[in-house]
Image (cartoon, rainbow, N blue to C red; front, side, top):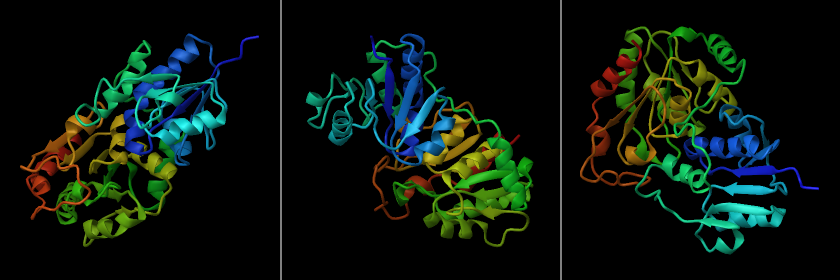
Length: 325
């Protein structure tokens, strides 16, 4: 008797990369469901994936913290360790890009036809599905808000004195490092003008972003909330889905907002938008590269942080206001 197929998806290790891999994972899952009758789809990885998975638009997929002995695994990280973990777990067929001495562990070691150094990450992930000859019905990121989550986000806003119809999210941090971050003082200038126009700012991010959030919100009149470090990822996703706009650096939350169709404005400098720009129907990227852009460094070593100072607060404000019309 043939074993019922059990598909395992191992996404990348960062939220933004998981979102950029979403079209590829959806295409792979769709093939296994529709062509092979696969009813078991497991997504395995970091614990925060359990909160993110319901938004990834992969019907029937379930999260697991430990790797199951699946029939087939698609391994998106390029590490030797990720392939070895699947081998040790008893996965029968392991598919992924060759590299890091792991080709002997892979049943299909795919060539890198696109480069994460030069091509958009979303297209590089999609090429896994393309090389497997799967149908690519949607090459853009398409996230979905689970039933009730948007209302839960609105309720959370109301609990903190915000009007959900007027809330704009700001994510002024970036886990990769300060080189990607637009200056807090300039964020404050933009936020002040947005508040003057009747909008209510909500800061999202990690605990280490709380101080930046305080700088941005200081001396503001009217409702506002610095929620950096005070929400779970699940709560942050609900808040984003209920918001009117996202202003943020190149970060995981940027990709989430854009993929949900939330109007998204993002300054780029240290990173290259041709490689990591978010996918979504309402995105404005501000990129005024300096001579050193994109440096891809964690911290800026050039006086004045020119890639960011080239982007004036007025440029970002105009972009935000155009999105809010």
